[in-house]
Length: 353
Image (cartoon, rainbow, N blue to C red; front, side):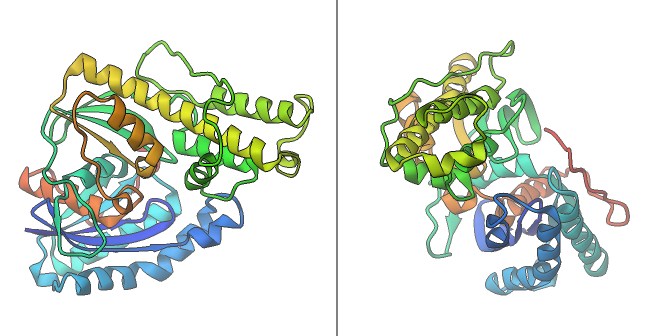
């Protein structure tokens, strides 16, 4: 059973072929990140236009790499939300057209849920991938951390889940991007702060952790503001000093120490809640998903603090990709989940779990 997965929720145009929900046959990603980096963030119009140019070549390459013909596919899975309107439209309209022309079943995939399923890939002949030795068992605790999402979810079985908590403001990846901009570090913020933090002392400064009514909810706006106030203090200015002028005033030691202190507290925030949820629900396995799941600091803290071993998927499968969409599509096929109508499937930019 082979499923083609198509992912265009943000700035990556991605397609992949996955077999039986565990074997990665091909995975092609065309990113427009370089076009957005000069603006310090994603520009939706640029992302959408890039998808238009890349979508057909990326799909063709994914099928070629898999040595797979259209007749050998059992279905198509496509991200229909959450994400940017224009970006989602390109992927969904392409998948709808292919499903109609090729007479293939079409599955509509929740992008956030798809991230979790990257952890179900255990085998590949593709070079450069390090995958878990076995698939996670249910019940499964998933920490989903990315630029747009921060959620803690308990999966009882495939497509049967309980949302334990979510961010009430910024997602953790968004907080990394904004703090990086304050410090004069390049976009995207996660890798930039991680690199700068290596030269800093993570205990240089005390920064706050948010405490919310629902103990599994997240908030990073207060931490982000605390970093701004700290940076202003370090350069000897008042709260009215504009953040855009901070980079030119901070020295390298200050920048590294602030980055290290912020990274430690931001990661501790999500790890604290993951450990608490593990202790309360006693799941059979724990996984992390989303772009921030590639963070070495997050992986280090979880490995040290979780009382059970945790298997991490390859960092290349943490950022947006078609493989995760194809994988969850395989399980929708196996579980006889409802099909999407290729004549009417609409995008859902604000889709939640």
